[in-house]
Image (cartoon, rainbow, N blue to C red; front, top):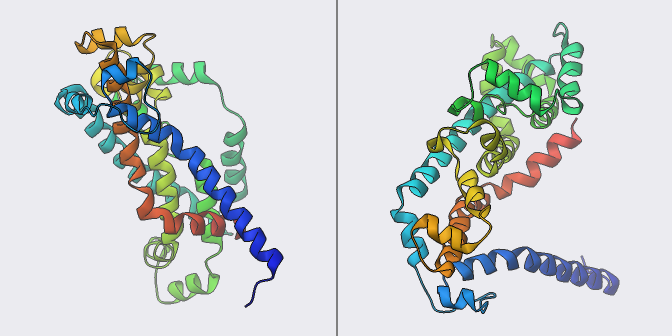
Length: 290
């Protein structure tokens, strides 16, 4: 199909706008990356913008040799994987039964679940509840309260609604029960939405620090990497950072901050290319077929 001149002009404008937005998004990360590889003297003189000055790997060496950072990275990775698997299981178990029209109390359950999206007790009652359950300062306080997202469950339920009823009826005629129908019919057809929601859960857990900040006070070994980074960045001066890490130069402390940011950011970014092809399909299909 031959495009008109106006269409070609529109495509060029859209491409330019996308390039500008991409550049705006990349500039902060490039600046952090450049600062993490720069010498302390260049940082002190504020000479670093998008390219390192005075190449220096001391910050990365320090992070890799520090047991605190290494432990936090591995702990956060395991926590992210575990939370993602549990959240996906909970989401599927909640969404699948709600697709049955003959489910007793189905409308009431739908209403109760959606109600939680708009109303909550608040932070203080939530804290008191977790304290009453003796979950504070434990890994479970980072897992159980956030194991199900109603928004993600609705996307999953909407996707399941889009599966033809004839497939379920055929499976039932062949003697398949609800569990077998789910495993052999619904899940194989839901690859895109499963990958998308897994990405949502993984990114949310990897980037999460507010729950750990509120509920984990006595056990630093349970700090995820984002909370560890948050505590580093909360120091008001680079001198304080350098002192805590055993350095005398403030520039080294600043470089260490940037290296820690990269360590906390790069792992989750590496996941996106593998799931990108499912991302748009999973969200749009789940939304439209609802």
